[in-house]
Image 1 (cartoon, rainbow, N blue to C red):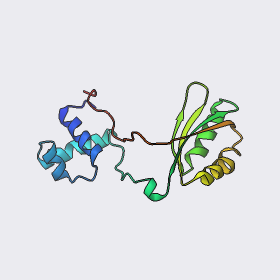
Image 2: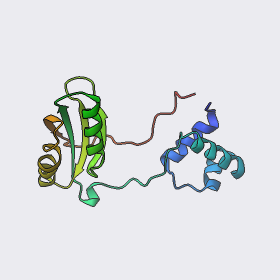
Image 3: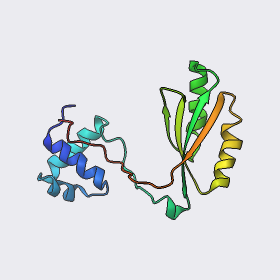
Image 4: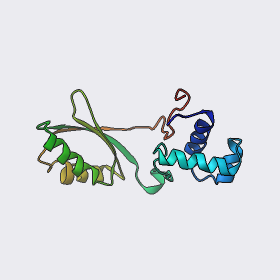
Length: 156
């Protein structure tokens, strides 16, 4: 799908606040409501807009630790990768999972309430996985920046 400046403005506004009504969104991007809605539907159909979510405050929900865990597998076979990915994808505390290049095979980010919950996650869920060879954890001491909005200035 070819994006124009109006599409970019729509995407930027929805990234900032996906709860905007179509009327309010149309005002902000200088369109009438009907063409604005048609553009949003086209962006959704093209899967440029995958879903709408509410961003929650982890600390207020008691999830005080953000931990990055590097995981090396015993083998890098397709079966081992698929098995690990299926298992790790089923865990609610896993916020992100990336297949990496370099020393670790995977980098995951977990959100847990405390060190005890992290220990239980590692001992009860990661360590028993037959694919896992090595686990290394790094704690986030302070969140300097967190954003969900993708940079759109260079898209068109």
